[in-house]
Amino acid sequence: MFKNARAYRLNTPFELDQLGLHERLSEKAFRGCGPLEAATIGWAPPLGPQAEMLTHAVNGCLLVAARRQERLLPASVVSEAVAERAAELEQTEGRDVTRRERGQLRDALLAEMLPQAFTRSRVIPALIDPQAGRVVIDAASDKLAEEVLSLLRQSLGSLPATPLAATAAAERFTAWVLTGEPPAGLTLEDQCELRDPAEKGAVVRCRGMDLGSPEVRAHIDTGMQVAAIGLNWQDALSLVLADDLSLKRLRFEDELLEQAMDGAEDEDPALRFEAEMTLMTAQLRGLLDCLEAALAPAGEAATPKPVAPPKPVAPAADAALEDATPPF
Image (tube, helix red, strand yellow):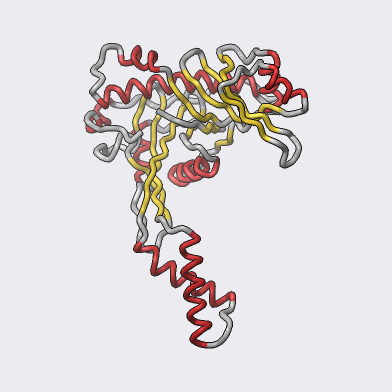
């Protein structure tokens, strides 16, 4: 299940089916860092290392997963080694080490130290929703989401997509708090982030507090705006919505997952994963539809334009994945 969500609007229909997308992604399959590489990124099977397919079809969406590996070599460690080596040279040769020489020392030390550094990997799942015309990436930062989107563009040759946009989102969040009336389907939870719109203004974070309380209103009365707000979507999904329309701290209700399992064996990882993904894709699709309609920039249509669905997927294409355990 996704913990975060950064959504992008597809500007053209996405028409690849599961097999076609797999073939495109195969050209950028994940490989580990070479001896002198600081980081690499590529596609990995979304159902885990035992699977073969780089895509998985669920509820009209295509699930993919980028794997990023980096070598753990802190800049402070390299800087300290450069300083030590430069000091040795200065003492031995009785002269100052120039900036250019320090740069050369840094390059030489990186070549020595990188191959010995430990590596760390992480998997970043993403959903392509052709029916809704969106790409949704489970990334907490914009930088990481853009890195995955860039990899997808490289794999496909082209992918016209833009981040979901809103006009004066903080002002609208503030109005929801003041009136206690967010858009239909959403209810206010007990957390928010208040920010002074002035540059480098004050920030107040509230947790476990009634957003209609006098304390919150007092901050708003001083000119602060709600930059992030805790919401619940149809008693199914709790989240924090930021003014850049990123979703964080996603948490799906356990009762819904139990209903989605519908008597299936809980200990079967493949069945549980399928139930979770079906639930997640349905709830995210509805939530993002609601947010786009409520926060659409002035002058733009609130209803997304139709996007062609993917071609039917043959059941046999993913048969090898039945025993796989998903990595997230």
